[in-house]
Length: 105
Image (cartoon, rainbow, N blue to C red; front, side, top):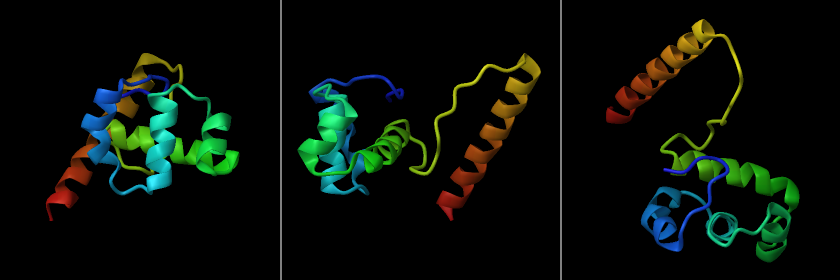
């Protein structure tokens, strides 16, 4: 699993590449350039022929899938009171359980 700012070794990327099978070849190459080679989004976009505007969305989908989340999920990191954090975590757990049930159908 990878977090939004984490780089990966080439071996780790290859081992997790199956999680990106629903994404285009272009997006897979973009992910490799950013996560393994360490290119910034602008340089990676130029290399694969993707607009800078599309890179952020593509990398958000990549990071979600590598973290075993749905591609349309958004990573959020915010400071909040402990009670609110507990409430958010409970809602996320319920959502994940609901998604797991629907996947089995």
